[in-house]
Image (cartoon, rainbow, N blue to C red; front, top):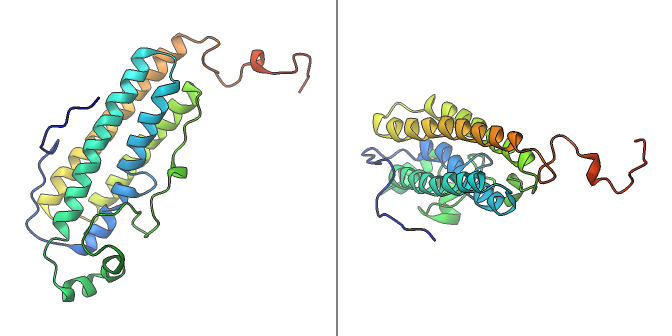
Length: 204
């Protein structure tokens, strides 16, 4: 069960619309390394996690990623608020506008819709945590790229906050991996476990 607090995790108060920038930032809403994929990845992986402390961590970070999704949605919404048709056409936002008007819809910066195939749930905690660490680094890299495009301090501040959280999450998943490796047993497969093979006498 979740308890929703009606405020953003970090304030978003953008005064100057910029539809061109919104088209880049929307990738962190529904792109391959965005917050929607992150939240779904961690909240799905937790069910097969054999250790309560690691499952709790996945649940906590997955929940925070939902808050980040809300933040990115607020950024995109405020960057596209009250645009004139001239601004929409001049910024190249017209193709998005045809399908979604000024609604916030999960897609990558290149226009590709969100797809659950962009993340994996393997049911092997070592494999899942390695993916999670890579996912946080990819998200951090995406925020790096966005910040190279941003010169508006109202946009820069929340994006920097989101990038900082990716670094923290990477560190937390590293701790979870160490916990898991300290408990190696039949519930997790470290590289491979011949005990799971059907053919015990196979030589490869």
